[in-house]
Length: 280
Length: 268
Ligand SMILES: Nc1ncnc2c1ncn2[C@@H]1O[C@H](COP(=O)(O)OP(=O)(O)OP(=O)(O)O)[C@@H](O)[C@H]1O
Ligand SMILES: [Mg+2]
Image (cartoon, rainbow over all chains, first blue to last red; front, top):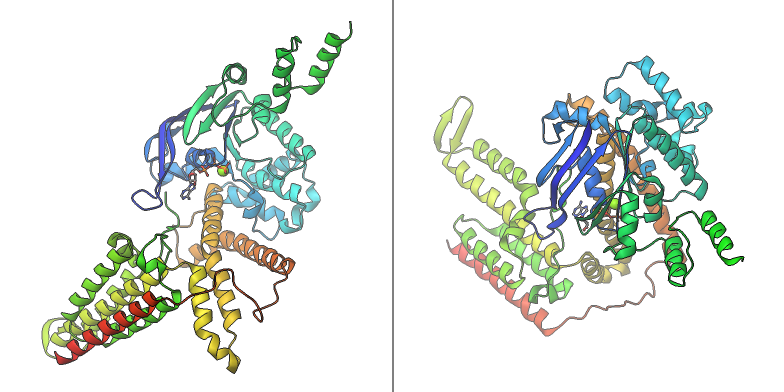
C-alpha cells in the first residue's frame, strides 16, 4: 500500500511557445505512516509533482500509482484516487466558499457520498483534532482568522478520511506557533498511519520532520533518502539548489576551528555542547 | 489534465519585428481599415488574396502562421454555426433537399462568404493583439480618443480600465484554474449531471473567485492611491508614443491595399 512514482515526466503546454519541462524522470515512493518531504527552489517542480499524486495532472511519460491503481485509469478509479490522496494547495484558504463552516466541512465527504451521520461525526472529530472550537460550526468561514481559515481548509480535506495527505507549503504565512502546532498535529496523524507528503522550501523543517527527503532541482531529483544521509551528503559537497540551514552552517564553521560539536539542528543542544567545550 | 486552456484569443507574442515596432495607433487604424475591407468583400475568390495578405503579415511580424490560426480556435464554432445558418436559411434555387432542410445555390455562396468573412475578421483582428502589448494598445486607444475628451468622453479612464482589465485576465484565469483544481481535489464533479446540477457545481468555484477579485480590486485601489494616482489630467508618460515615417508608410500601404482589393472585387 503506497504511492509509487516511476520516472515521471511532465511537460506544460507541449507544442506551443510556452512549452516547459517541469519534471523529468522523478522516482518516489510514499508509504502510509511515513512523512516524505519534497524540497527544492522555487520553480523546481514541487507543486507539479504534488498535483500528479492525486491525478490532477497526468504524466507526459512515466507512471504514478496509488495503491496499485495508475492515475491514468478511468473516471471511477480517479474518484477513488482523489479520495485516498487528499491535496492541500498552497494558500488553501482561498478555496473556502460555503455559508457556514459546517457546510464547508461537508463539501468533500458529500461529493464522495458519505452518509450524513458519518459526516457529522467525523466533522466533530477532525475539528477537535485541529483545535477548531465547535462554536464556529455555524459561523461563516470568511469570518475566521487567517490561522483558523488555514486549519479549516486542511480539516475540510482530512474529513474525507484520506490515506495520504499532500500539503503544498502548508506553513507559508503562519506564525511560529501556528506552524509548530500544525507540524505536531501532522506528526500525530503520521503515527496513526497517514502518509504525508510535505512540499516545502524549508530544508531545516524537512530535516527535522521527515522520514525521507526528495530534493528537486529544475525538475530532476538530485537526492532522495533519509535526513541523515542528506546531511552527510550536504556536508561533503553542496547539492545544487540547497544551502545549509544557519545552525548547521554554524556547526561546520565551529568544527573547522577545532571544536568537536555534533551535527545537530537543535540550537539548545548545540549551546550546551559548546558550553562544555569552552569551560575547562 | 487540462481544465482551462491558457493560449486563447488575443495573446501578445513578444518579438522584435517591423510590425511589433509600429506605433500602436498605426496598427489600430490599419486593422480598422482591414476589417472594413473584409466587410466589403463579396467574391469568395477574393478571399484568396486576403489569405495571401495574412501570410505576408505573419512573415513580417515573425509570428508563425500556426500561432495565428490557433488564435482563431475559440471562434471556429461560431464560424461554423454562422455558415450553417446561412447555408440552410437562404432562399433561392434549390440544390438539395431533405425534409425541411434545403440547400440553395445562394445559400452555399452566402455561407462561404459569411463564414470566411468572420474567420478573416478574427484572424486580422488577432494580429493587433498578437503584436501589440496591452499597455501599448491602451496607450494607442487613449491617444486616438483624446480629441473626444473635449466633448466629455473619458478617454483616459477608459484606457486605464482597459489596461487593468487586460492585465488581470490572465491572473484571473490562473486563479480560476487553481480554485478549480482545489475543488476537484475535494471531490467536486463538474462534468456530470444535468445543466442545473452542473451550474450548482460551479458555486464552489465562483464564490472564492469573487472573494479574490474584490480583494485584488481593493489592493489595487490602495496601491494606486499610495502612488498618488488621481486620474488623467496632467499625467506624463514614461514612453510617449512617437509617430514615425514607417508608420505613415505602413498605414498608407494598408489603405492602398484595401482600396485596391475592394475595387478589384467590385469590378468582379
Ligand atoms: N500552469 C502552468 N503552465 C505552464 N508552466 C507552468 C505551470 N505551472 C508551473 N509551470 C512551470 O513549471 C515549472 C515548475 O513549476 P512548479 O509550480 O511545479 O514549481 P514549484 O517548485 O512548486 O515552485 P514554488 O516553490 O514557487 O511553488 C516552473 O518552471 C513553472 O514556470
Ligand atoms: Mg509551488
